[in-house]
Image (cartoon, rainbow, N blue to C red; front, side, top):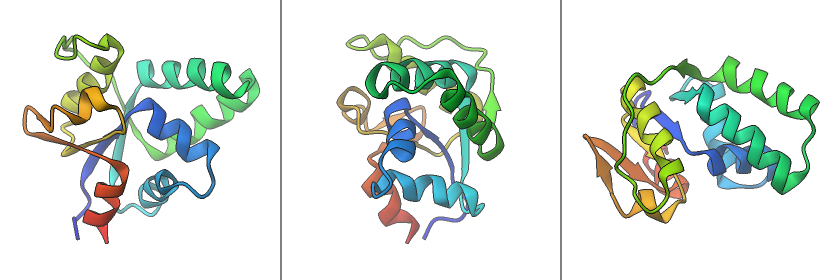
Length: 137
């Protein structure tokens, strides 16, 4: 079992954790709430969350604001100082790397194939939500 790892979850993992009550991703939020891991987000990830949730689920501004409040309470909000251009196939994924680097994360939790195929970035392991939960139990 990992001891209080620092993590960055990508936007889709965060959305899934709020949209799918039975999803494995909910366990990641639960771990953060219990103080068993330290999750980081950036303002850019929060904005992307709100945009995608609005498009995919029709979440209105009020619901997005409420979830933003939860994220800011649960997560360490960082402001990346470095712009990274490591993911050419999907440049939006670079904001996840930027957040993880700034936060000193141990893990990036993602289901995104562009990130997963990297396996690691600057010593930060890139794994699926299920892999992370296995490491935590």
